[in-house]
Image: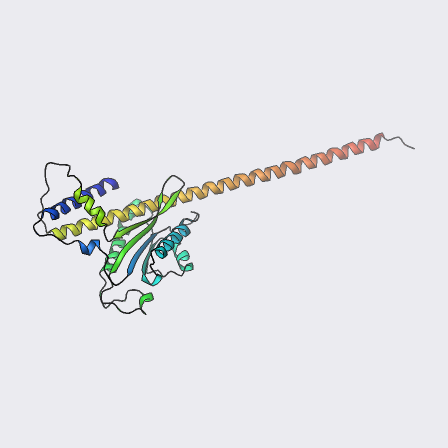
Length: 282
């Protein structure tokens, strides 16, 4: 099953649950997953970069873009819990004096993406449901202690491929869920005459579908970032190839010029010698 098909299946499941909630005699509150938790101001930030080099300014650009977006949203450095996916992000974040709470390696193949996503989901759960006795991060030790340091939101920053050699940075709000999007799902026409029925607890089933939504969203971000990394690497290789060709052209031109000068000099010497031989003797 393709990623698009999987995402479509998850959306159908959420649509069925939301329609069931709409017609339920007992309305079910979605606030824990669709509204920021008040008063705490902590924001989870997940950046996708690369583990390997030779990809130009791929990592520098996504770090610069992410910090600009966070500053634009007035999210201060001490309010950020940062997870860096890719070792090459670390120097740029350290240069910007942005503390890093978690670091992950990128999978080397599509087969390893699932494990990486599971690690990210575990980190997200730890961020969202951290116990009172646990410190949030070393950078937050001097802050006033809060009773439950829930995150207000979780943001993803990654590069999205737009062609074989180009990409653009993207921001995506992972949590809380977009209430407008959920409302659109709820109002979307049901494409079947058979209406779904639920045999499980609504909250448990909705939570399971949200987990699948988070999984497919993180999976897409990882794949997009890997594709963009390859695009950046291809672009860098093409730029290097062009520079080499230009350098070779210059060197060949210099060689031809030097060779022509040498030949010209030899011819002048021959002509001068010939004239000297033919000059009448006194």
